[in-house]
Image (cartoon, rainbow, N blue to C red):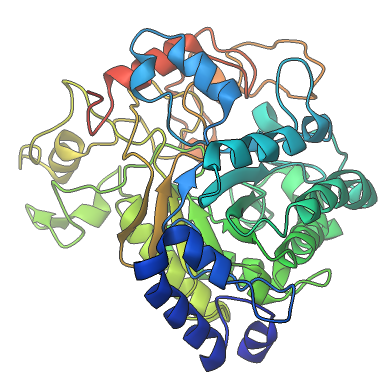
Length: 467
C-alpha cells in the first residue's frame, strides 16, 4: 500500500526525489522568501506543482469576511476578528453562495486579494455526505442515505471544478477538512454497541460514507494545491483501544475507495467543532489515588488519552499501522477548547478520591466528554499556528467561533437541519453521553447560524486569554 502512496504525483509522501525537491525549496526559501519557495514548487517543464510537507508553513490564513464582520460587531470581538477560520460548505447551495454568505469562487478570489501575491491557506470544510451525521440530528444534511450519485455530481464535482480553476495559483493553498463526524460513526454507533443508531447501521450497510469520502479524496486530492485532511473524531470518542485502530482502519478503507489512494490523504484533523482540551496538565494516566488509577475515574472511564494533543499523536500512530505513510500530518481544532476564565483549575483536585482528584484538576469542564452541542463554560483555545508540536501540522480554528452547533428547541428551517435533544439544556442524555445532562447553552439557533451569547462566552473564557 505504501507504493501506491509513493507513486502519487507531487505528494508529500514522495520518494527520495520528491523529498529532495522539498529540501531545495526550503533552502531557496531562506533567500527568496515564502513566495520564492512557492514559485520553485512549480516543476520545470511541467504543470505539476509539488505539494508541500505542511501547507500551513509560511502561509497566512484566509480571513472569511462573513465571519469576521460578525465577530467584529460583538463587544471585544475585534481582538480575534482577523483570525482565519474554516469555510463550511455544508450544502450544495453553499458552493454558489447567496446574499448572506459568499460562495466558494468568491472566497477564493477574496483570498487572493488578501494574499497580495504571498502564500495563503484557505480552509474549507467538505460536509454534505448522504445521510450525514447519522448519530446527531442537529447537523443532519440535505441528502438522503442513498443519494451518493447526487453527492458526487451535484456537490463534489462542482467544488472540484472550481478548485481546478485556481490550481495554477502557486501562492494559494487549499486545505480541506473531509466530512466531519462520518467515518467514526461506522465504528462507534453501529450494531453491537449500546450507542448504535438505525441510521448509522444503514450507512454502514450501504457503504455510502466510505464511497463518498473516497470520491471526495480522489477528486480533490488530484488538484495540485489542495490538501485533504480527514476528520478523525476526538479523544472522548475514539480514545479507547476498541475504537482507535478500527477507526483508522475504516479511514484506510475510504482512502482506497472510489478511485482514491492513501496519497490523497495529506493528514487527519481531530476535535473538529468540538471542545476537548488540548492538554490536561494537572494529572496523568499514570497517577493513582488511594490505589485507584486515574483511568478508573468516571471522567476518564478507561480511556487511553486525556486530551487532544496526545490523542492526535496516538491516532497518527494508528493511521500508520493501518497503512498510511509514516509522515502523515495532523491538525487540531482549537477554536473552542480553551476552557479559561476564573474557573480554570491551577492544580489537581483533592486526593480524597480518584474522581475528586480528576474533576478538581481537569480543564475541560463539560459534564461528560460526549457532550458536543454549544457547551456552557467553553472558551477560545490556542490561536491558529503552524507546526506547534511533534507530528502536528497546525492548530486551526476550523469551526468558526460563535456559530451554533444546533438549536436549543426545534426551529423550522430550509436547510434540512433537525432538532437534536443534545442541544436542549433540559435534556438528561442518552447512551452516547452516559445519560448525563447535555450541558448545552439555551436559546441557540440552528447549526451554523450566529450565536452571540456563545461568542461572548468564548471570549470571556479564552485560554490563552484574549488581550
